[in-house]
Length: 114
Length: 116
Image 1 (tube, rainbow over the protein chains, first blue to last red):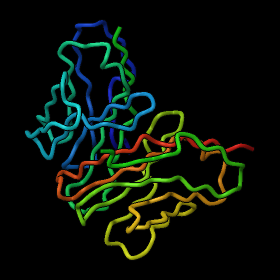
Image 2 (image 1 turned 30 degrees about the vertical axis):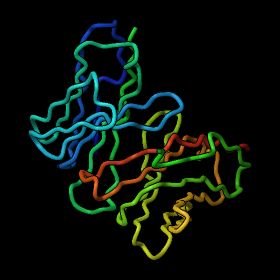
Image 3 (image 1 turned 90 degrees about the horizontal axis):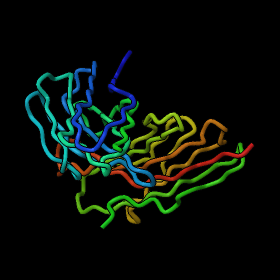
Image 4 (image 1 turned 180 degrees about the vertical axis):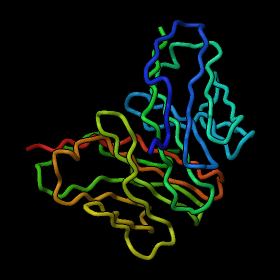
């Protein structure tokens, strides 16, 4: 009954360090998404994927890279972390078919860049 | 231009009262879907209710209903008989079908506080 699992849940980085956030889903969903949530704002789409081996840019892609080597996993990378990337990051997934399919979210990763 | 607008940053309601959270949207796509999510203080995003642009009836899901006024481009969430556990952030989101990939655009959210 895992759904969407994000690791890690918390992380503190220094400016310039790199890291990868992992998202795993066990629902066989085609579509996966990475969002960031900043205080006082809704979620904004960073990158998304419509299937294994495919990725595309969202609304705020700069400073991030993603990979979808396996259908169940979607990785978000920060090559050189900046304080402006301090945020809460959410991964989500959904089925390909059906207009009324909600996105299922992970519990989020709280990332602080010092 | 904002695609999803939630004009109430915060709302305070007495327990057991009904509450309406406002959401207006902007799209030229005739096919779209509207979603409401709840985010409690623990941080997770919980799907509440969905309304499709061609749905004839307002969506309902337990104590949640959606007051969909297509001509006004509004999709307000109504919570009946509010409970203390309803205290949370609430987000309205829209999916435009011609954008593909079932991408969602979120509003800024409304923080709902239920007072005992």
